[in-house]
Amino acid sequence: MAMTYRALSRLLSYPEAPLQSEAGLCVDVIRDEGLVPERIVTSLRKLAVHIAGSDLYSAQAAYVDLFDRTRSVSLHLYEHVHGESRERGPALVSLVELYRSRGLELDISDLPDYLPVFLEFLSIIPDAEAAGLIGEAAHVLEAIAERLKKRQSPYRAIFGALLAISDRPADRAAVADLLAINDDDPNDLAALDAAWEEEAVTFGPGTASDGCPKAQSMLNTMQGTRQ
Image 1 (cartoon, rainbow, N blue to C red):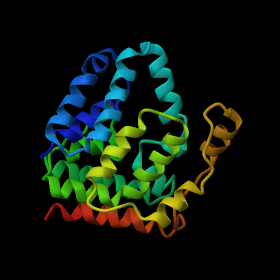
Image 2 (spheres, one colour):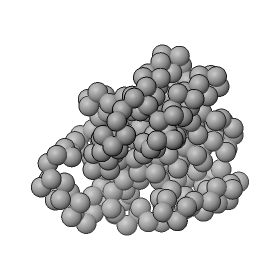
Image 3 (cartoon, one colour):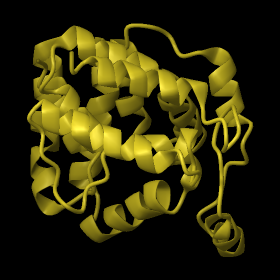
């Protein structure tokens, strides 16, 4: 059971004063555990310096613009594979039940597909299972990483770390499908309003009625960890 996931979860969390003081220590944990290649640890160190050295209010505003107002880099994994389709609700319920079965109780405000929460779960299961679950989500992580690279965001290092730990490479066709979706601009308020008003947005391959094969595979694997 790796502390690396908990440290990555912390680095990916909404920036607050305690995180600014702890960011460097999180990278130390990741480096010492040795699951992440040194070149990516170096990039994580740059992220930690960025978090620690930024004006707090500016860092918080930038974080909201990046992850909360930009749907194409949302930290909610099922947003990319289910959108607002009806499959997302049952998938979220299944995740909550899985987390609970392994001893992780969520705060009432937490959605289980939120990546920092998912990383907390990975930190309490065996390493091989964690690497396998990352592999099931690798296409989503790779697509987000590509979009963050385009934005020159230091947060890309977190996704690089997860992809390095994954037990398999991302499915290139699934990544391409995700990247084919328009990359929204948080400053284009009219476009954002239009996107959020849509009733059934499906990110990735498949239709809202069929669901996403990659999402179903990920969910099936996660449910299999209960056995």
